[in-house]
Amino acid sequence: MLEGVNVVLGVSGSIAAVKTVELAHELRRQGAAVRAVMTDSATGIVHPWAVEFATDADVVTELTGRVEHVELCGVDGWGDVLLLAPATANTVGKVAAAVDDTPVTTAATTALGAGLPVVVAPAMHEPMYDHPGVIDAIERVESWGVDFVDPRIEEGKAKIATADAIVTAVARAAGDQPLAGRHVVVTAGATTESVDPVRTLSNRASGRTGRAVARACHVLGAEVTLVHDGGDVPYATVEGVESAAEMTAAVAEVAAEADALVSAAAISDYTVEAADEKIRSGQERLTIELEPTPKLIDTVRADHPDLPIVGFKVESAGGDEGLVARARNLIERVDLAFVVANDASVMGEAETRALLVEGDAHDEYTGDKGGLGLAVAKKLAGKLGEHPSVTE
Image (cartoon, rainbow, N blue to C red):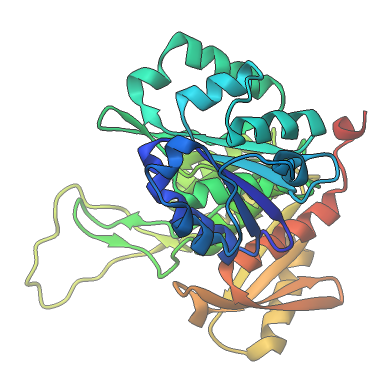
């Protein structure tokens, strides 16, 4: 996700600075090169040697005749993006007022003047985060195009966002955004059909692929609505659903304002009329009548004949030839942009193998589901082209 990206990591004196080592490692695991700049207060919380170990680079703790702030964040500097994590109330206020009296705030002033993308991950006690002056400072800095990664409000503290959320924000800020101006709806995970108040029918889908597609679309600049059976995520507006009917209804409601739909969820093909009370156990034999559910992509296509839709096809037999044939049949039947086809054996797994089928050709992807999400998002971006409003 961050291959070839140079991240300047500015660390200020919040207790959340102890997370810096973990964050630097995660940035590097995603392909970034990292160089850190620290305030004096931060060095009292996490030793510069620990940050040097995590980044595999010298750490700037004071500015010298080398003008390190310009070297890292100037017009022709080393960095592609400046990440302030953690950013204290003190640091955010100084950035807003162009006060540069620490290596971190001086790097920020330089980056903003040079047009370098800046991402800020605040961390402080909740009353400080709610202070009118801090709110004003955040709003002012945001108005300059700076991206803030919202903290987690817990136990009276505005705790620094997760490493995953911060890495996602950095990737979006530092990379190209071919989906800028687009609204993409993504479905993910399994749906669940109630048999009675206790029992359900579902499938083995984990939702990893759909969430990876949603995250990748966000990184590429899209506004994303994620319709799934899980909780909130930092990169999308979430519509929580359980059954196939709920998922279809939720997608139908947002499809009118969407530029594309990626139907990655493993939606139940059958449902059952749920019993009002728990079915008595111990019966020798029990028969449940299944009824087919409406196909989500058919429903959306009927209402929106011109909406680009990406379908997913899972099979357990037939090999690649059978997968491609069924994917092409699906493309022709519903007029899909392309189909992502894979074997059922990858459901629930971290690694995957998929065929991206379009017309007479198909591409093969093998790797983790994060990479597949990015491949799908890039292919979708190519299909949609640049949004007119971005070029106006």
